[in-house]
Image (cartoon, protein in one colour):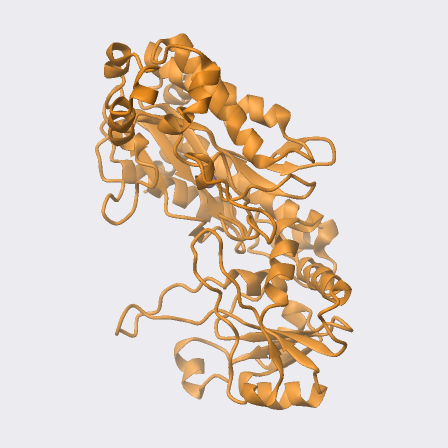
Length: 506
Ligand SMILES: [Mn+2]
């Protein structure tokens, strides 16, 4: 089937959409129209919003490497993407709250653009492409907005509760002639982003599908002797070539052996550069991003395809907590309780293994779970991998070990998308700290524990959508130890893996 035929056949293809052809997902521009309409509904219901208010957002700006003229691949600012779905840099966007009228402002490009960057499209092109009501140039902002005679410009100012950073509020020459409010918009739009629409869920299903497949390709290809970055590269290649995903949602974490306990391994100071050894566990946390919608998946598996008894025991302990949480998730459940549930299962299982000894209730009282899982159980996921809205007004961070790392403490409602990512890690710093604290040390069997020094860690991370009665699992990868061993065994005896096909092409 040709691309255009496929496009014509898709049910969602009425009207403009984002599409990269072939098997990639077609995302209707209607997704953003619905987002805007939901936002306007919320704002109109807010007593603080007067009639004739206009939302004004500033899109992301094109940047270069330091002082050079080398451009950095542009990725749209997340609030702007949620509202307009515009992929180009240096735009502004406005929405009239009463009518929902959407106005896009595009930069007036210099003639040289046509020489170096390609055709300069007229405003009408963008009006069609993004299905907005009006398109003007950014140098007309002041004049166009003034012609609407707004009572209030609603700009975006608020703190991202994960980073602590403040959003960049829209500003332009001439803004001083308007009455501006920068407090109403942020909590309302963040709240809209927390609850995904069906169209958004469809995109997140797609990012999960492609990223799950990419993880499976990595599991098929991995062999002792490879560098961690080779698997990072394979994941990215699969996501891009099959899924049209130019970006990942975050820096790939490809820890093997002791690196699997370094929670955010893979950064520039530790760039997935270790050689994978026979006997290593691999903890690979990677997610592809399509049209700014993300995914966040972790697979842990033995590099040689066979779990050792200790690896199997720790893996199955984590799998048990993961499945307990997936079973318990439903609307009305408080997320910190899911974290506590995972901790409790870990403590029970670590006791069975012999690393811990004593009464589980007493271990819970001294927060022993956080020694093995210092991070939160999971977080909201969407356009940002740590998606916004985790701590709205009235939801407080719980200042206790482990729980304080949670990126949300909310009660679950349908339409939320979250990661479930329990883990057990053997981090020397935390183990030594626990051993030095008599309240915790009494539960640790140091002889057994010694065997697990340098073990690394296990994390199992799936993405879920909360439904009316429970949850929908978006991630689809081999999960039990038997499934993993069978999958990796089969892959190594078959020549049909994507990796081997690719290398044959070279
Ligand atoms: Mn995550």
